Amino acid sequence: VSNTIRDFISSGCNDRIYLGNGTCKVYDTFHVKRCFKCQRYGHISEKCESAVSCGFCSDAHETRICPIKNTSNLTESCCSNCKNSDNNDHVSNCKHPAYSVDCP
Image (cartoon, rainbow, N blue to C red):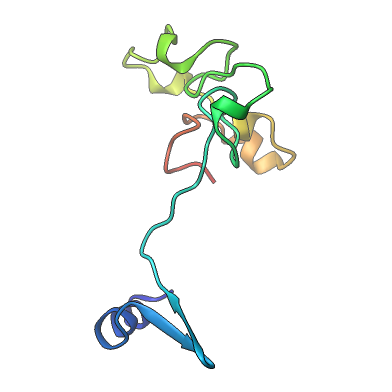
């Protein structure tokens, strides 16, 4: 929502939206589950049955042991979600880690 609407809700409505006879709490942020094993969204690693994928370079190893993650060359990063996407714009723009805020 716009800053004007957010300011109105937070100052005059106690961080709530009133809908009919009910109310909904409004949050500034939300948590999205991302698996640290396969890097996909919507589940966690304890329940993951997929293959291991590095969150930095998308190769088949754990992110914590990535050989290029701690180098200064961030251009070698490759988001596994964008790399495996059906969207060609995401595939051509995968030069970021899976955990980047720049990931579309």
